[in-house]
Image (tube, rainbow, N blue to C red; front, side, top):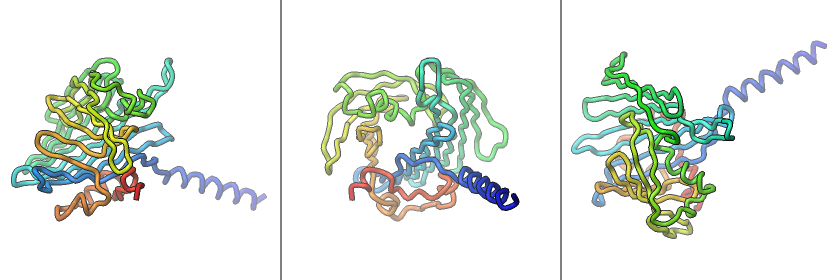
Length: 272
């Protein structure tokens, strides 16, 4: 009947709209404050999400910090995929990386697309170039991954519990560095555990691409803080605490994330 056809039509429209506007599940989202020698020098926004429809895992990061007397800004979007192989479900298979950096008058874009889990096609652009200045193919070894996913990968290997890492044991790895579009060797080792505000924090040293970063992590791989020789960065409860009086380019941030991050999807906020 005509009425039944209309019901079917509207049912189809509702399903189509719900599919079209479905969002990936946000697994982690937070604002970080950057300090150097006790002085507020910038902020970071990070979101980790999972799209169950296409099995994509995405980490998007926005960073703005003082660089001398000027500001530097960078946006990174790293995508990995859960894929089925003859050995079963394979997590964090590399898909693509888009990295943009603005420092003083120079803008750099590094776009990397993975042709296979260990081979990436890398294009590098400067300023407003429409054609890349450099195109190269980078190859890694079996088991390599995109560097932003490091601690989630390690946590997954430990049954989603980093506290199972053997203390002081060195774990080598190879990862793709988003900012320069190449594979590099690295290694981590667990330093100590701390209890802070009811949370178990795993302290891990990460040596990668010529730098050493002391990270403070929750058992599932979420980062609550990090320390280098130059600065410290730590998770805060809201945007105001991270941004302070610094510029907050809302349009660029919304474009990078698809919406304006609230920074409320993390254990620190949930503990209130």
